Image 1 (cartoon, rainbow over the protein chains, first blue to last red):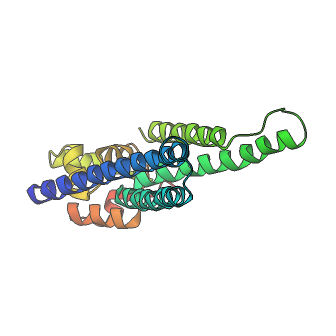
Image 2: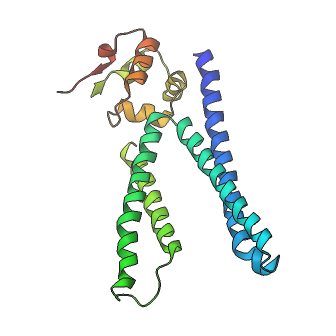
Image 3: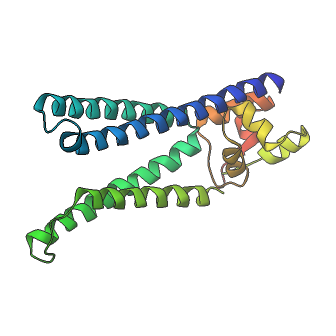
Length: 140
Length: 64
């Protein structure tokens, strides 16, 4: 079992490293969103070139985050991947169904305000977290 | 699917963590397999068979 202990440590270390990388990319992505949202007004007075750079930076870091997430998922074991898959399916389904209904609410005059994308993201995050919790409970 | 993972592990005096280490999965996954809550993939079942030096059907049995 000694050899395996070393291997497992490597596996756990890799998973932990992937998680830290994903956190780093996600945090950077959030920061570049803030830069894109507030930079034009507070930092560079709506300079077009700088705004384009900020948007491109945001997209570039976003792609990095997607790749880090992919690497993180591939590094998980099969049960953890199953839990993630179910949670993401729930999040996508809830986002699609409720997102379209939410958007239609304004079209058919059932709500007076314009639907915000941030509300949809919060809903999808909630659905994803619920899926993760349910998945861990299912296999506990 | 039923399995003898817990018995085989106990015979060798291994902990769930040690078995998880040997099979390159998390301890939670070993726990779920032992309790019959999660069915392992074929590659993982083969890996367990190799580790215990048994045939797959000596470890995992279909409940049907």
